[in-house]
Length: 160
Image (cartoon, rainbow, N blue to C red):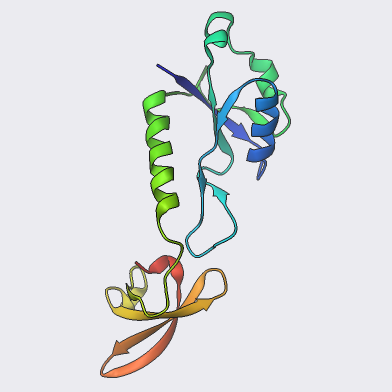
């Protein structure tokens, strides 16, 4: 069974840390997420953290702690007291599966698609028609409210 360690990285340096650790022969995993409403930019699911696999060679000789901690982009291991945080391989595989499912979901909404508002205060629960994007995080929808059709600018994260 695989054993993963949780490593803390410097701010926005997850990929740098992963590249440097992989050059040293480590296997790393940093789940990535395409934020809702943003089409181009992919961000880490856990900003500032990544997973480091304990390889069979390390099980016998021990993980080279100092080598990992002194790697560019790495701050150190996440610890609970003196012990580093360890994750079961099944949990990491569940995260990988979830990441793949999220990648398969379509990006954003299409013009004319029926959407529902959630977390939008007094408008929560209303349905509308998606019109267009307005920047990276906001969009324009058409709502029918009190027998009147109105265009409303909302946060894309509040739509489903």
